[in-house]
Image 1 (tube, helix red, strand yellow):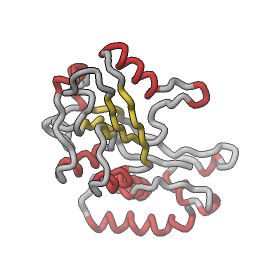
Image 2: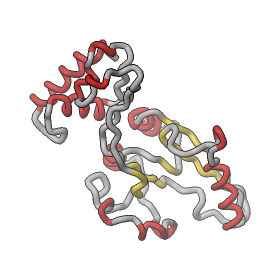
Image 3: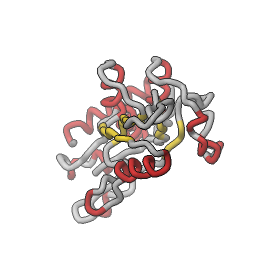
Image 4: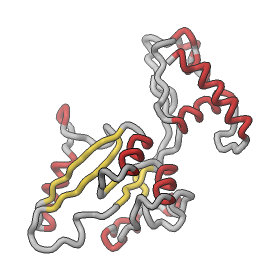
Amino acid sequence: MKKRISLILAAAMLLCLCLTGCGGKKNLTLNVYNWGEYISDGSEGSFETVREFEKWYEANYGQKVTVNYSTYASNEDMYSKISSGAVSYDVLIPSDYMIARMVSEGLLQPLNFDNIPNYQYINDTFKGLYYDPDNQYSIPYAYGIVGVIYDANVVDEADVGGWDLMWNEKYAGNILQYNNSRDAFGTAMYKLGIDVNTTDKAQWQRAYEELLVQRPLI
């Protein structure tokens, strides 16, 4: 089973976009760092997003562009790599809370909105949010929630219906908890009926202890 509960408002972060400010007909390079399995890659007959973008860009702007596309498994993996200073990317797609952290640590550059004309079509609901209140560093990309996913051929229907399913000893060894402390704490808080936005450290401790109970089952 896979559980992901947090609101994800991933945003394209343009650190130093190579597609702009380049003269002549030189080949351009765009380094993109995104979540795994976020765009179709041509496998199993799917749309090959990167290659199609490269063709579209050359057809419309007369310059060849090569997209170096890399993926990561979690916000924390991405952050560790970027904060080390060993690599630099032009476009990142982190979650909301990670954007705030990276902005506070000076890891992102402000966007040039002259290069993003379609920003005008983004719903105002997704602008001016806590992680980027002045809309300087990010563009909303996607948002949503995912509940508990289970195999109906394995899990008894009588066990489904609450967050305690993620702690059911009957399925020990077949439970997958998302490898992210923020999301893991969220599942524990939902199970315990705790407000996920609480600032009460005693409640955090309760969630932590609940995760310790779950750990041997994963």
